[in-house]
Length: 270
Ligand code: ATR
Image (cartoon, rainbow, N blue to C red; front, side, top):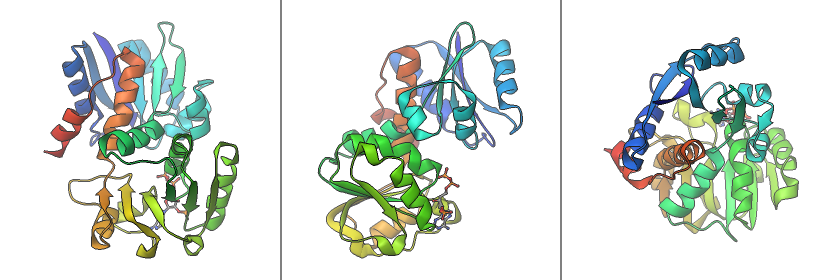
């Protein structure tokens, strides 16, 4: 049986095994997928050991190793290179690693396919300028929004990040107080949710039919989803669909078959 795993630290709460096992069942693919806790030093050595022991065909990578693997792997897809992070690895028979990143396409598919939103000719506000933001910018710009504004607590990080993507579309950045006008899609990619906090933005930035999207998810509404509902945003969405869509894209890379994500999202919602 082909072997796959997700590596991270900590990893016990990962939903990835459940998701990939559901995809395998749905598509009739024979594979095993497990979660493995690895330690922050000698990541390359640990992957080599895992590969030797399990003959892994692929890996998913989660916190805190996505950037580490970006710097360790020479053979990267263009989207992983742009994202500055790797969340999916394809391993050849000989043990060569190919690094990809499916997070960004996971977000855009969730917005477009699962939630029926449009990005083309819409204004996007992206909150946060860390790794999570960097990973989704290129796929969002690819859908041709009118513009994308990155707002961050540390304004300089947002302007620097925007500068890295100038070639792909209308993108700029600044601090919270630089948010001007109304936005159709507001995406929270800050780590504020982890502390139950919401970035200090005004609801005046929400267009009439605005969608608020938190890249985080939880059993209860996240702080940003709660904020969006309190301010009557037309859509208040969490990141569970993005999680399943990034997994579906990884599954496709490994198996050449695209699983259906909706039933798996529904299963996880229960
Ligand atoms: P990640 O990979 O999750 O993006 P990161 O690279 O550490 O993690 O980035 C965290 C992001 O969340 C940053 O944009 C950070 O703002 P700063 O650049 O000003 O540090 C943002 N962030 C973290 N805690 C926050 C909070 N309580 N309120 C607002 N923004 C916060």
